[in-house]
Image (tube, rainbow, N blue to C red; front, side, top):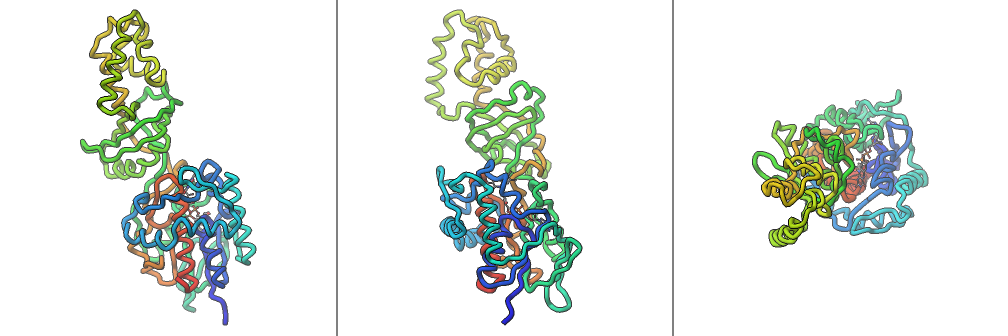
Length: 410
Ligand SMILES: Cc1cc2nc3c(=O)[nH]c(=O)nc-3n(C[C@H](O)[C@H](O)[C@H](O)COP(=O)(O)OP(=O)(O)OC[C@H]3O[C@@H](n4cnc5c(N)ncnc54)[C@H](O)[C@@H]3O)c2cc1C
C-alpha cells in the first residue's frame, strides 16, 4: 500500500511538529520552508532560552474568536503532551514559576532536537522554497508551487505563521495562500509589542524600569490592566505588562479609538497603606530639605525629577515652603501617570501577529472547510496567546493535531 503524501508548508514550530507527527504515523512527509533553515524564529524566543510552554495552560490565556473550539484543541494536546513530546526527542525541560524551558536554557537545543528528529524520521526538508501557490490539481491531488518547483501531495498542512518577525521568514505570505484557498482573515495587528506614546519628554526618563500596574483607558473606561516590570523608552513603553495589553491597544487604535495608558508606580499600596505613606512623609516636611530630597526613596530619580517639574516644583526649593497642591500633584503622578498611545512598533518587533484564519473556517480536525485536504497549524490561525509560553504551546498543539488528522488518525 502506498504511503499518504503530506506536504507541510512552513518549517517553523508548528510545521516541524506537524512533520514529525505525520512521519511517525507512517506518512511520506516533505517540509517546504521559505528561508534557508528550519525553525529560525525559535532561536530568538524567550530571550534565547525558549519559553516553550506553561504548566498553567488555560484557554483564558489566549485570544481567539472561538474559545470553546480552542479549548477542545488544548484539551487534546495539553502541557503534559508537550512535555512528553519534547522528552521523546531528547529535550530535558526545566520549570520556572510554571514556565517551561529547555534545561540547558538554549533555544538552539529545541531547534536542533526538532531538526534531528525530522532527519531521523526521513522527512524531506526543502529549504529556500517560498511557496506561492496551493491548488487542487486535476488529478485530485494538491499541487504546491514554490522555489521554481512544483510538488503534488495528498494532503497539505499550512503552517506559515503570521507576519511577526518577518526576518525569520513569516512575512504574511501564508495569509495570501489561505485567501487563495477561499478563506477570510480576521484583521491582523502586531501583538506582544512595545507601544509608542505622544509625549515628547520621554527621552529624559528613557531606560527607567519599575514594577508598576498599567491600565488601558479608552472611551472613558478602564478596559484592561496588567502588573509587572515596566520599561520606559525614548518613544514609549515596553516590558511584559505593555506586551500583554498591546494587541488590545492596537485593535482599539485600528478602530479609530483614543487610547491612554495610566501607570501606577505604587501598585502595592492600597488605600490604607497609601494614607499611612502620606502621613509618614509628613515628618519629612519639617526640616529644611529640598523638594527632591523630600521625594527621594519613593521612586526612580529620573521619574521623580520629571514629576516635580510637571507639578511646577523647582529642584533645590525648600519643601516646607512648597505649594501643598504641587506636592499632592507629585503623589498623584506616582499613581496616575498618564500617556497618550499613538501606535506600536511594527511587526518587525512584535512577538506575535494577532488575527488570521478564523477557527470557524476549520473543522475540529483543523481541516479547511473551504478546501478539504488542506489543514492549518500555528500562528496562521486566529489564535494568539499572552507571554508565558502559550504561543509556542499553540504551535506544538495545532501542529500535532493537524498532522494526526492529515495522516488519517485525527
Ligand atoms: C522575538 C520573539 C520571541 C518569542 N518568544 C516566545 C516565547 O518565549 N514563548 C512563546 O510561546 N512564544 C514566543 N514567541 C512566539 C512564537 O515564536 C510563535 O508564536 C511561533 O513561533 C509560531 O509558530 P508557527 O510555526 O506558527 O510560525 P513561525 O514560527 O513564524 O514559522 C513559520 C514558518 O513558515 C515559513 N514560511 C512562511 N511563509 C512561507 C511560504 N510562503 N513558503 C514557505 N515557507 C513559509 C517561515 O519562513 C517560517 O519558518 C516569540 C516570538 C518572537 C518573534
